[in-house]
Length: 405
Ligand code: FEO
Image 1 (cartoon, rainbow, N blue to C red):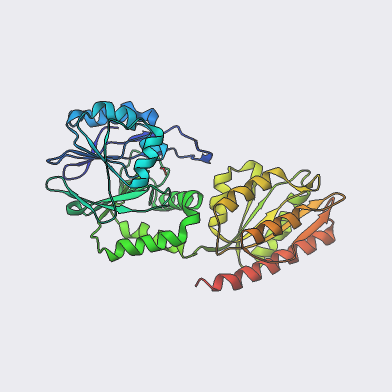
Image 2: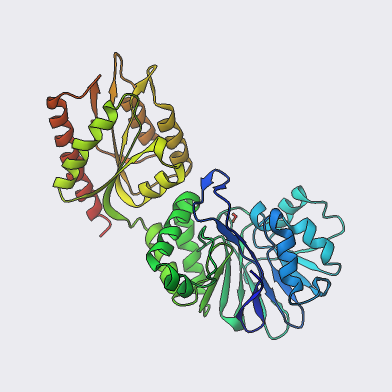
């Protein structure tokens, strides 16, 4: 796909990655895009580069508009490899360019490249760069989601180039949210936003709230949000901002995610009466077998639910390995505003359920105790107990959910 004009003299010149399915361990069933933006002004300015593998496409897109040697300014909003990987190749085409980035961006850049001959200027929040009819304003967003991160606001275009924030891993011929909604649906797009937030931004809810407030306090007039992944928000940019605020404030669905794995189906059998008990209390429930589900999908389903039930058999006195992997992912994402419980089967010595409650405690999650354990195979009486456990868990989830209404 060639350059696309998104505002007068401002072009998307990025790359669509239709094939990527593993994004540093995060499953991307819909691929992704690496967006960057070229502003044809008195000083021609490029904002961000692309992933290394797409350097040729990126340069070709720029060449479809201008000679890359004419680029005067290069803004690097974020130094993660998917946005800066092509920088070394791009710089060979830009003999007379000044790079603008944060101080942490410069430090990181020096670790990736030999920058000794590059002209790099560091910027801070509120600093401006007049490039002709357009003025760029820089907004640092440290730890959203790397220390170097920042956004660039193009004042006269009312356009916020938001880097990873508000992005989605979604390869599409649509460049804008309204185009995507026409050919697919808004619901699909919103699910991609939740997926991205859950797997990348979950640990930073407090920061997200304060940064959005800071941007609102700056009273920036924004009618377009252009992230570095997925579609550009032009029809209702305030909608995705509100989605972020809602997620950062802990809003989610009155729903329980049962995430389990199983050896000889005993733990799996337990999921069914538990699920029925939850449903009979009027609470929606999603049952997810881990070995049949990518980890990032399980994380998203957790994030879309107020309650979490984890089911694990005990193997060699330990939790089942796939469950341990899930908990490792979850712990790193520092979840909040969720209530959890555990269940599982064992042969001659339990351990998994106890381990899970210890992990919930380490994560400071609210819990419903005790969990429920079954030896070898659930009997009809055990299934009745599982059903009652499901009902009790759902009741507590309903009460807990009220705090967020
Ligand atoms: Fe899309 Fe943090 O990189």
